[in-house]
Length: 471
Image 1 (cartoon, one colour):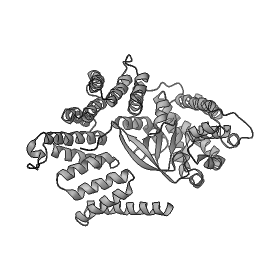
Image 2: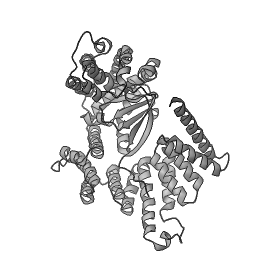
Image 3: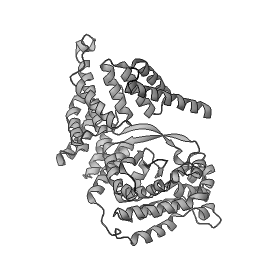
Image 4: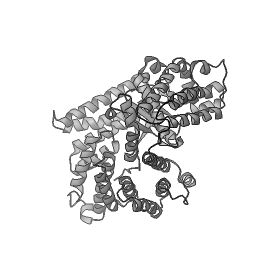
């Protein structure tokens, strides 16, 4: 199989006006991982319920961006940058950020007309640091925080956001209180941002537009601390199990994104904690040291044999190392333990197909095409992958692997439809349209798949027409 599945699933998603950019749509790389998404769900669910929203309708999305940032961009989704996870020291700190962003969601701030015109979305770091760097007049500092064109939007943006930020702060404090979660993490994270403001050289000046139009971090800390200290949850201890999961996910993300040398410096071999071994497993794997990666993985499983994410890690390392047959059992077990979690099931289906392809390459009859029969794992792979996309249609790699399955079965129209789904999720609308039209031509008219192919083709034509109009 030509494609290689990463330890996190990655895809480009079109998100409205990211990072205070003046363009209406920008492509951002979204990172998907079953363990991380399960953690975010459990961290956010009590806050979402406290906000009066349905947890089924609110997504917490991880974005591959080193900036310490979070934002909402319309709808009921909160976006957390990988840099924010790396900067946070506890699950409670991230919960404080999520509560704040939910305040923007409930307040409808991201779809406020003024916000759409001036900047496009609400962003905690852009408000706290971007303005500070720009107001300080430090060109290098400002460029470190703001992308090209952002300063033009900043003045208009800050002229109306003070009230919205204060509203989101108050709402976030209310949600934390209602969920019985301490606001200590929120205060600790604001102190981190205050330290960054100081690092970028912002000084308070009565003539600064930032001072007159936007609540400074130290003002917000004073307001929030007063609210939080009066709350019964202030002295409530955080959930140690939840925080242990956060430390594991944080190390996992660091090991995946960082250079192996940086991972080994942050998590040296003398550190034997679960997060340290988890991060090093990624680093060794990325460096091609299979034996060392497997030693770290096996040590995790020796402590917790039924941890599905350690099983997933072992299976993925083996799969990416070119040993798909050995990856099948740990991935099958991980899939079972997570009740067929779609991301893990996709990796399992990939291993099944890859094992069949490896076996075929070693079989002269199948390699030469005289034996056209699918491999022994074909039926299971088709079942697993079909179920995975039925539960989660937003995973482009799942569609890619399912397309491979359809192609092996000789079902080329559905293979092209799967390709159309994949390309649409990757925001490659030209390829999505071509695949959808090819699928539509070969599918039974009026069937659900034929209608879906029509939908994607129309979506692609519309997107391409908008691109030409604005280009």
